[in-house]
Length: 261
Figure 1 (cartoon, rainbow, N blue to C red):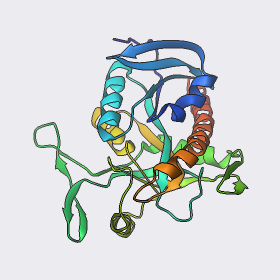
Figure 2 (figure 1 turned 120 degrees about the horizontal axis):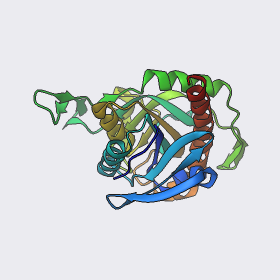
Figure 3 (figure 1 turned 90 degrees about the vertical axis):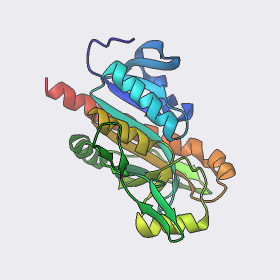
């Protein structure tokens, strides 16, 4: 069992591509395994971090997050990755700072679509929500960091532009692709910007265990029933855009931590 000497940031991505840039810039690297799951720790932009891949889906995300939070006792958890674009105004690489991360399959599926509801939690008398908000201090830091961030240009679908970073809503479940009816239901009831497969579960773990968290996701393909081809074409661009923003945020986080010493 790891026994970290000082508080660090747990930095999670669902896929290796989502944390590749972090690991390339780590110094003083130390590799290890926790319950069989590999991680690499080190210094990133002046901040001690532990990086790990959760795998895809809510169960994988929750399992890895819970194990690593318990073992490393991080000061905060940062999720960086991609999501399909439900908001038609978003472009590939545009990054959402999630102000609400939602389980979009939590509740009752009726003929009129989803009815969202809390469910019984692991503790006696506890109900758990179907959405979670980030830590207010981390959100405040992210909002300030966004004002000083100049994104690198990306090229996607025949256009070159600087992707934006802005506040928004992220929805998650184990669905990779969804029907047109589900997309309409999501937009009507939740109006999310992006849809992905891990962050709501990770957010729930963090809230349950009392660890501050924040979620960053960059848009890849548009949300659709069969996104495989478009995701393979656009996912790497989105993952890199989210990672570059996250690096900037980590720099701001390290500066804040140093100032408070």
